[in-house]
Image (cartoon, rainbow, N blue to C red):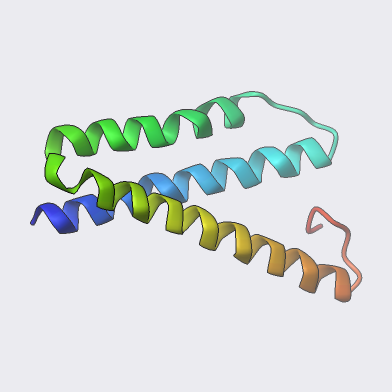
Length: 95
C-alpha cells in the first residue's frame, strides 16, 4: 500500500510542479510576469517529499523518482507540442 501511495504522491506533486512551471514560463514569454507560479513550483517537491516522508517513509526514493519522471515526461511533451505548433504556424507560446 505504501508503494501505491508513494507513486500517487510523486505523480500528483510532479504534475503540479510541471504545470506551474509551464504556466509561469508561458506568462513570462507573453510579457506578463507573475512570480507566484515559480515560488509554488519550487515548493512542490518539498511538500510532496515531506508528505511522503510522513506517510510512506520507506518509499521516499520511489516518490522522488516518480516526480522526476513526471517532470521529464512533461518537459518532453511540452517541447514536442511547441515544435508541432511551430510547424503549423503558431507562435512559441502556443497561441
